[in-house]
Image (cartoon, rainbow, N blue to C red):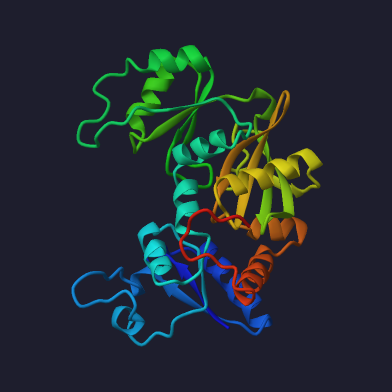
Length: 310
C-alpha cells in the first residue's frame, strides 16, 4: 500500500517537519510506503490535452497512490486529487469548512451544535474595505462587551482579539489583515482555558486541558500551558458531533467551558498534535494512519469529498 502526505511547499517550519516525520514513521511501522509530496510538486493541471482519466499525462511518472493524507490547505489541489478518484483525508470539503471560521460556525449552527453567539462580518471587496462601520451597532447590541474578534483565516490563536469597547473594536478592525471577520460572545467562565479533544474516525483518541494565566486565549503558541485530561462524556460526545458536522475524518476540536455546559470554539482539520503527544503519550499520527489504512483496505474511502461521515 502506498500513500502521499501532501504538505505545503512554501511553509518552512521545524514544527511541520516533525509532524511529517511522525506520519512517515507511523506508516513505515505498518509496512506502508508514505511519500511526502509538496503542493509545489503537484500542479493542478486541467484542460487541453490533459485527460482526467490519464494519470501519467497529468502527474508524470509518479505512481498513483492508494490514498492521500492531506496536511495542507491547498483546497484546489485536494479537489483535483479527488477528481482523479483518489481517497483524500481529510476531504477538500472538510478542509475548506474548517479553514474558514465563518463556514465552520455556519456548519455547526446547521447541526445544532452549541457554540458562542457568533456574527459574521458583512461581505465587502478587498479593494473597497469597510467604508462604514455602521454595522457594528447591531454587533455590539447583540454581543455587548467584551467581545472576541477573529479573522476568518488564522491558526495557533493568532488573528484573535478581545475588544473591551467600541473604540478598541474599531481599532482591531482597522488593523486586521483581512475584512473577513467573525464577532463572538466572550465566554468569561472559560477565560484563558479550554479543551483540545482529538477525534479520529468518529472517536476520541486523546485530549488535553490548556490554560493561560496571562491571556484570554489558551493556545500553547500564545504562551499557554497544557496537561492531559479525561473529558466528560458530554464533552466527548460534543466533540465527535462537531467533527461530524464539518465532515472531518480526523480533527482537533476546541471546547470552551460555558455556564450551561461545553461550547465548541473551533474545529481544526489539520490540528497539530505534538503537544498532545508530549503531555499524554497519544500519537495521533499512528491513529490517523491506522484509520486511513482500514478505510483503504475496506474500500470505504470516499473520492468526492462530500457527504462523508467517519
